[in-house]
Length: 209
Image (tube, rainbow, N blue to C red; front, side):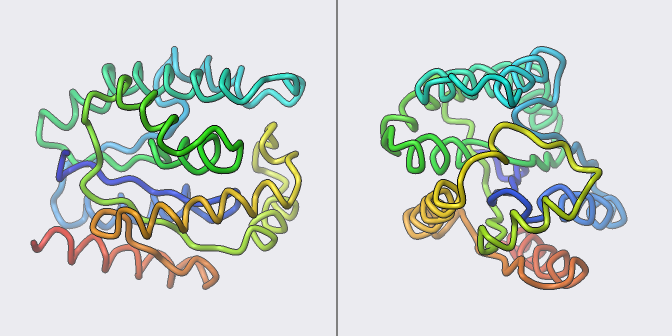
């Protein structure tokens, strides 16, 4: 586990990217060296894998294939970008990490949280975040936000049914109960400024420990 590794999680439309930028700005303002990144992606190879995973026309992709591709993208991203920054003492803020695979593929795709965790254990070699912020938002509200945002990329997961996204949400809630010391819930059904402030308070409290 790396104390300077902080991840943001949540369903589609929860506002992770916007909150991540707020947190990055606040951390930099307080004198921290910060690296922001995302999954899947963050580096060239992983971005190429992202394109395969999220391409809407790849609708025949099977759940295990999807889980393995996420783990592969995660491994390369970790080796090339995340671990070097962590070892230099930088704070890494990452939009999604292992919990996304556990919620989406493990729970919603019904592959099993433990089975998907095992795949990712091989990929990350115990490199877990010290803090994970779960942006808690009703899936229906999240999908409405996506439909209203014409600038956001529409991907294969956006096309899934509301029931699938509801299962993703249930998966996240189970993970938060399973790892309460690491995963902190943030009410994302608020104005962005308030969500960002709540997230910042969680980070500030965490860094005081």
